[in-house]
Image 1 (cartoon, rainbow, N blue to C red):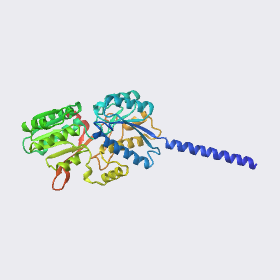
Image 2 (tube, rainbow, N blue to C red):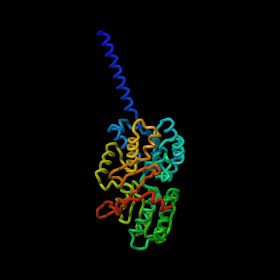
Image 3 (cartoon, rainbow, N blue to C red):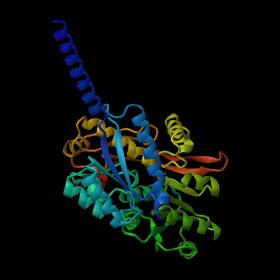
Image 4 (cartoon, rainbow, N blue to C red):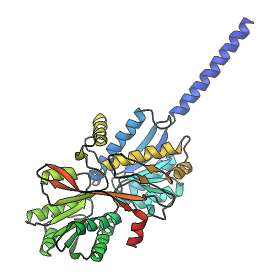
Length: 396
């Protein structure tokens, strides 16, 4: 009898241990996310800081226990901003790594092959830090989503409306862009809306990707009599014409989209005629939430902070949380199509995705300018809401 009881006790112990080990193994099974990003190469100056803070955010989540008891495993692949590499990365991530979610943080030239792979494999694809493609606007592609704050169409419209409301005198607007398709969308929108608002277009300069000296383009804008200039392009093609105009003695006002290098440029240039519209807050505002992000960056060794990467990290975290466990690609796509993502202190309002709108239902902007007396950027226009579907109807 004693031997039977001993045997039964051993059996119970084995079954209990087996169940515990099985439960532990299941708990540790990760959510798999694949990112193709311009980590090195020319575009890395823009995108690598986003990847760094995204990685730090995911590390923070995992150190706190993960999502629904499971860690997030992100497989990072460097595409260097090259379409062929991006396509290869995407196929490897969905076929070999079996990720539930793809993230693109790279230039628009990489979109076509990555989108094709997402569609073929029915894998949700988030553009996190990459400019939002047309396919995320209503009626949205079911698999494509975007958390990025800047959007060419909306940025161009908002910029010229700000210029009009801020100007007492007649506006002669100069427009500057890098000669690439997405920049033309933003600048052509600004031109069309500006004309409707009674703004005179002084000149429009398209600069090649290979430009080194911005002076000839700045000279054209100055000679055309522009008293305002709007630039929308990758950062060097935004700030380059402004610095050239300053050297030429131009006295007008200049507005651009505020990408990550903006705060350093504000302080370095110390000019009050430089304005920036942005869909995310500037770290210099010193809000508690922003200080927390800086502390996380310091903890995980991030030297350059681009808050678009943080927003993308929050988006991944919240969508996986909503998906639950287990989380298939189909289940994740469904969860993403009806979620609201709040990034307090960083954005003016939540990112809300619906079944037909994978950009957001509301876009928020804030405009900054440099204040020399205070030695920091200040708000020229506080957070302003734009109804996305209404604005799209206006711009058609």
